[in-house]
Image (cartoon, helix red, strand yellow):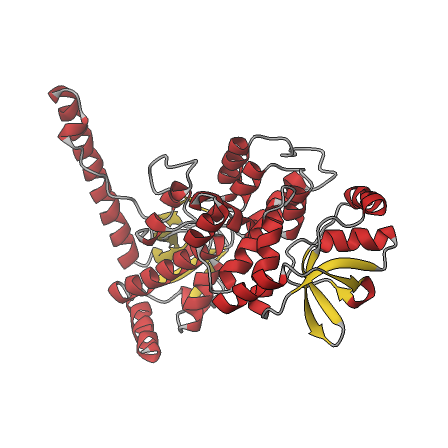
Length: 410
């Protein structure tokens, strides 16, 4: 690198005229869009005064050159009808040519945020730079570099809106926090040209952020799986600077959320079936988790489809805590109500147990979208996908059949 840098410094003193016909643009240039009006102005200036600053090129084959920097001057010279252009010819490697092209373009005042983001990403992908070195080289703080790098993840349609100043950098910064699936919905429903109702164009970044959180993320409090990993996840809105409002936060990664929920429910179903093999598995079409049903079926479990609603098993009441009440009288009143609720709960559970043993009702573990709950249905009204013979089995016969099935699964 030191030898190449010395060589560059020496040849820069020697400017030569190169035929424009022998010059070609480079794929290393991060700049992909050139303003036609600005090019026309520069072209007219070149007609009047010539090219005042030489471009940089490197030889790629016999009498052929590739642009290292100065593609805008090259294009304007073609428009001006020139045949030759002043150039500095440099013998440099592909790596150095790429870095010089990217670095030179980043120094322009009119560089767009997307071009800047792609340029920074190219330098990092080269393996010779990281966020810290880029911040030092270009006189930016690390937060600025990281924000620009996030724009690489913007879907093309939203990136174009940023390029055309249809949305602000602040709005783009909020949108790029989310995955492609959410970005597509935001674009199609709120940013696409022609959207008449609920358009987000011109909206403040803070309002866009809150709208996305409210409409396209899910409150993690609604899920029962262990959320330890979620605490440090970048897709948790609690870890986004604008939020941090306590609680578990909201998840913006739908795929990950669905997988963690399905894995948890599958594991819970297996555990419940081991604890109570006499209870069957079921699901209802209007509130179920298809992924869990498919996984359990593949594991060999029978999962019945109910065509009507099964009544949930009663929930055990929670005892009141004394520190939650201002006075002793309020606590004693709450304790009295709890004892009554507990008695009602015990009596209801005993009634369900008695009816189950008598064959009047059938117990199920119902697979719901976010949980698995114990429920029951009257046997006389039960209609499932199983045969009538299955419905008339006694609790003992059903237990024996389930035990046999469990052995087959094992």
